[in-house]
Amino acid sequence: MTIPAAPGVNIPPTARAPKGRRGFRRAVAGVALAAALAGAGAGAAQADGLVAPGSSTYVSTNVWGSSRICVTNYGASWGSFTLYASFASPEQNWVPAYSTRCREAWWFGQNVRVQNTGYTMLYAYRAF
Image 1 (cartoon, rainbow, N blue to C red):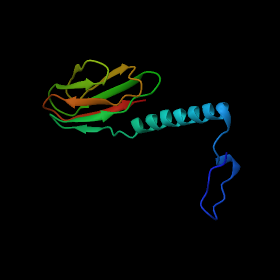
Image 2 (image 1 turned 120 degrees about the horizontal axis):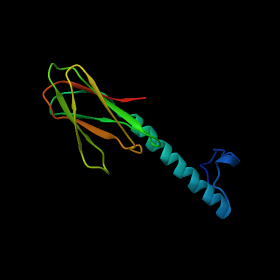
Image 3 (image 1 turned 180 degrees about the vertical axis):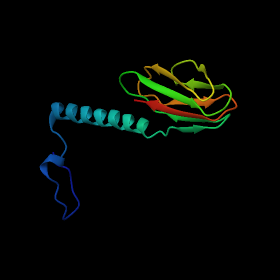
Image 4 (image 1 turned 60 degrees about the horizontal axis):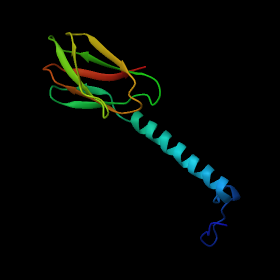
């Protein structure tokens, strides 16, 4: 079976649809792998950054292995933040003035929402 092409367009043999069940399985596996890699890339596109009081940002995590999310407090008093992952209950955390607090866990590539629940400016990021 060949893929019909527009007149005057040459399709190289490697771009044609795979033949038989084995070819179909390879194509499905290739699409699944591409989708998994695209999902990992989408997580990496989330921006770390400053989190004003009452607002939130998303921090990307590793697809496999643990990830460390750190929050730095730029204020003169204690800061508080909550981590929200789609499959876990929210985690309330505290960070002393002018300090950094990190939390390491397996989030499996989920973008974790960091919400500033205190009154100081925070900076959230993923530590490598």
